[in-house]
Length: 281
Ligand code: GUN
Image (cartoon, rainbow, N blue to C red; front, side, top):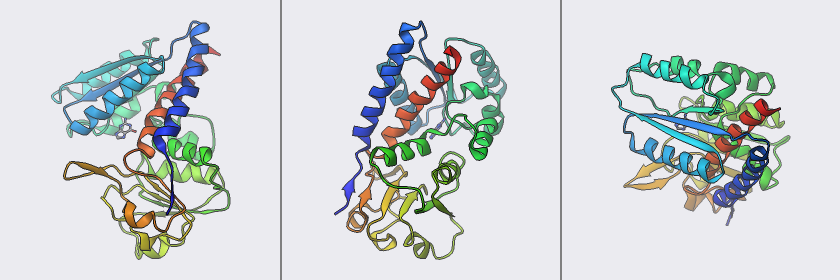
């Protein structure tokens, strides 16, 4: 039976660390601020955004949530972002995705000032990650790396297989693993004979977005399995990994819920505090 990586526990520890930094910033007269913009009534997004707001406030950040109707025009949102770019109360700006279909996601992301882009989605930050320069790293892959570090799981020299090539998770995950000297294979929906590749993974990262598709027979005995999926089946949350069979084969495994998810929020707080520190120094 695999050892379960407790994301809730580690995110609590990470958030405490962040709170310590926030306390010291308060003493210097700096209060890190985060603004989260949500457009429309997407139920999962509404719950994520509430979670982000609550966690930010609990860590001592100034947090504001702006909820706009789905009828909001792209130009109104661009104007709002422009105003927030110049608002010193906010060190981080996050626009919750997905956006309503009448909005151009690229244009919206591009409008956020790179030094306030705590999601790490702006091309300047994406380029910085690719080049190994400092910048904001997307919260979910950053959270995965933090979990591996907390659990002292070796990455250097290991074969990491990432399933999924999204801009939010898969691609930045690959860059971070390379930065930590893993040998990386990227799989996606067009990959042929996926099980043959996943069975070679010392570290398997599933970011597919389909429930329970990674089963125990696709996993190398002793591997570390990180499940980034958040799927809803009959109202119940589950990951991309079939936990029951995978946990019989893996050495370490993250559960859903309570694995990577809580770390994403913890990393958002860390990125926001980093943004405030850069300005304070
Ligand atoms: N939607 C799902 N995940 C994310 C995320 O990490 N950031 C934003 N802005 N939207 C998301």
